[in-house]
Length: 278
Image 1 (cartoon, rainbow, N blue to C red):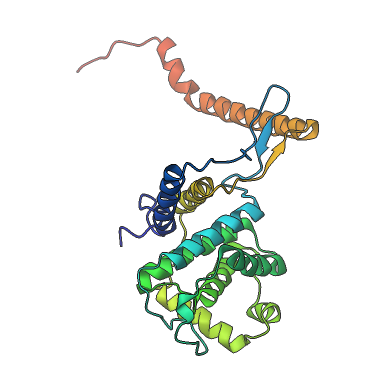
Image 2 (image 1 turned 30 degrees about the vertical axis):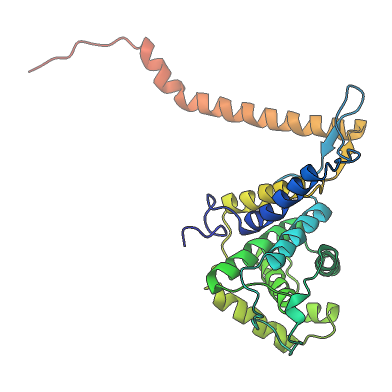
């Protein structure tokens, strides 16, 4: 599975590829209809004010990350390859035309935000959730659709929270958040999820970074700006202190490296004696 983006950092993420169709159509429609982009909402730094992005690959902003992850899930459902209803992880029967009614982005966002808020999960967990979701769709060769998206997302969140977070949420805790699910059902779903993933829960750092930056690209394409805050005096002093600590650390490392190579450098000044061949 060399083309699987959840395993290989060079493979393109599925959600970004699926979103490009809508992005191109929206741009084409705006161009044909001469639609103005409207008032610019993105903030730019000036001589008097500096705006900084509070989200980094090591510490993503929780609210912005959840918005991007749920938008990726929305495009997975909207642009799914098959229009046939699948029953994977679907517990109860649904109407025959249920698969025709795609959930909107706000509905998916509220569902995921409720879980993350109640379980106190991190933004990194949201990114790993998306990695597991795309790995499941690729390994099991299934689609995520209106009849199963909640249980697939719940299974991915459950697994990501146990693998990523130090203090994982117990299955019984999710049952208190979602009243219509039992512990036995959660255990069965987790076991089924792991089997379809072939128990591959490893997320390399390169894959994690790729998903983070692709989520930022998705945000730019859909006018979802990450939170920008003006740089305050206290924040500037904090950043300066962190920068100074890093600079001192690198200086110490450089000195240690120089000491290790000092003995080899001194060989230049050693007087060499003539070799005696017998």
